[in-house]
Picture 1 (tube, rainbow, N blue to C red):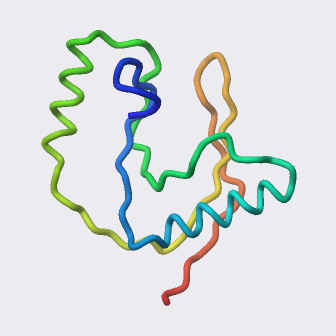
Picture 2: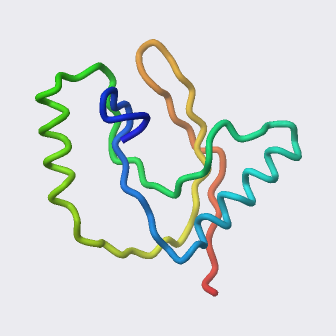
Amino acid sequence: VFPTWSRPRVVWFGIEDAGRMMELGNDINAMCTSLGFPPDHPFRAHLTIGRVPHPISSGQRDQLRKALGTLSEAHPFDVTRVILMRSKLAPSGSEYSEVGSFPLRGT
């Protein structure tokens, strides 16, 4: 979870892929830095599976941790494109829109 288990806001799965996602993340960070937008945190290859909009109790955190702990098995999948999304924070919740879609070619 992001940012911590004591106050989870985002539930995510880490991605392991022999470093290719890290290379992409580092390239994006370098490009953003060259445009005057330094990264605010280290890149972590991940797949967001949910958001926690309000604080949850310690019992609910324990239930979430237990449920996620049962997902220890690897689940490989192929990625055929990357979609760049814009996230706009609003009082009613985040609003997402697609900025661009980029097909990936095999290596």
